Image 1 (spheres, rainbow, N blue to C red):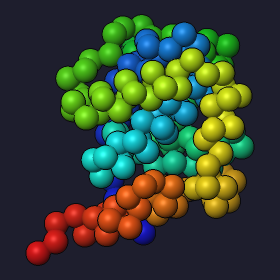
Image 2 (cartoon, rainbow, N blue to C red; image 1 turned 180 degrees about the horizontal axis):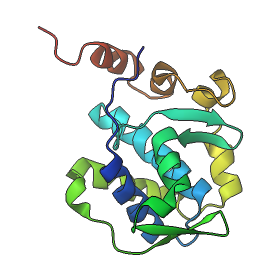
Image 3 (cartoon, rainbow, N blue to C red; image 1 turned 90 degrees about the vertical axis):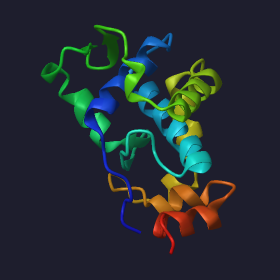
Length: 165
């Protein structure tokens, strides 16, 4: 299945900030994993990813592709700094105007459930069946992510045809 979502870069920057300002250890790995878990929860409950990103199966688990590019090009915005090539330091508060109530619900739940874990623990948790099924450094098929969710069959049908006649 083709990736069904449109990426929203401004929303992604705000998501980075939102997660970073709510984590004790805001680093590239932790932010990526919190986003992955929030996206999976949002997909399961609401049928879409929060920022519309796609995920790559990297060595340390799923990485939101476009969000990772924003993090790697941190000099192109005034929202955050990357310190020592790893730590994310917000330069301002996130604007929650970009998020729906469901976005914030899933981000908050992901932060609450996983935010206290180490990068190593988050990496291990993110090595789910979707990540395992993908080739390293390649895209994780959305259907493989959906297959890890409780409502997989109905969700695949919805993603294939979100507006049935």
